[in-house]
Length: 307
Image (tube, rainbow, N blue to C red):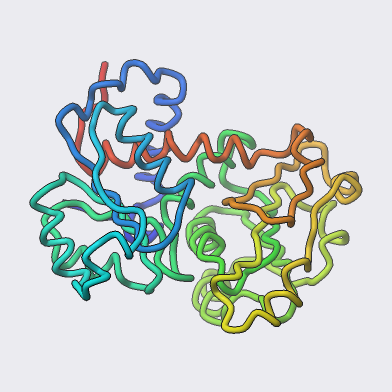
């Protein structure tokens, strides 16, 4: 039995197979309609979510399975003080696989140690978000045709952004990857990402605070929102929330084949006028998230690919 807690839990070869399966699902969706008949997915979301929770549910329903779970800690026995370990022991009696989002870093790891079913980390605090990373990898590969020899711009909240941390961890395993880290001083990537991931793997990167200057060199621009829920005081959030706003004028500085990604939700860091630009890929990215989670559920449940 396997879990997905970290984007590095799968080798690059396994990720390639997973993305191939997701690609086949995209183009042949009807043939996967019953591969998980009788299987149940539990969604344990201790933190608010729209895309991740609903895309997991859509993925399982598309595979013919069913879904149970809760959408907030307040509607679970966590409100009564039940531990994650006890919750997963109970859920293991009801479901075949579970997806967990939790505000505390490491909670899905604890769950996996007490679980008798596969556990998928659907986001733990500011730590990791591996299924978003798989979505990002599928999106980049589908749009650019490769996952190597790319200059990736990461912009916004690089300190608390778990999607950013996960994506960096995953992409450093591919050749020719270069990062441009665009953020205000207060929201720079954590030291451990810089030293233990980028420096350790000899990855070329630079840290800048000017988005306009960085635009012409990027193959992918990964925008993120400044996350109000991660701040300890509202004054800091208000001061930093509008640090970067991508609009039509900035898009004129970009390559014709540069694509914009965003894990969503956005607040105002991407102007709605950009949505009409063919390089705006964030809504396609959300659709890819369903396909990649379908592939992941099949892989962890060891379901055969239909002929």
